[in-house]
Image 1: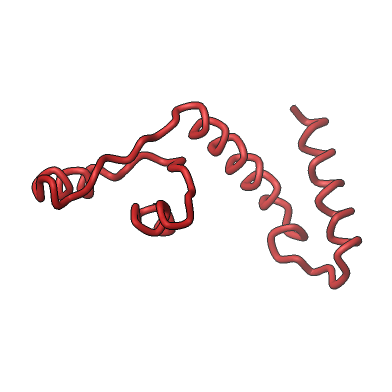
Image 2: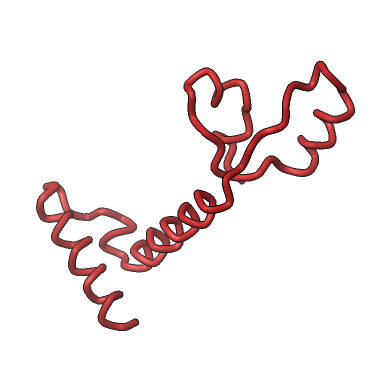
Length: 93
């Protein structure tokens, strides 16, 4: 669960659009409170699909131990490690 996205007020203050749908329990609590519960969140399905693709790509990169633990001290070496991992993933698929 993304706790950073569960606060509707926090997102609205920063003018950040919703990317994930509101959890069922929060939806039910908002409806139960009536007008005091605020307005429902608007979720864009295309943005949600794009977010899912990015999350899966990052998780595939984290399967490489050197990327997940970040043994490299210098940023340019770490960038090379990520590039190599991405290349290996690309060649395997």
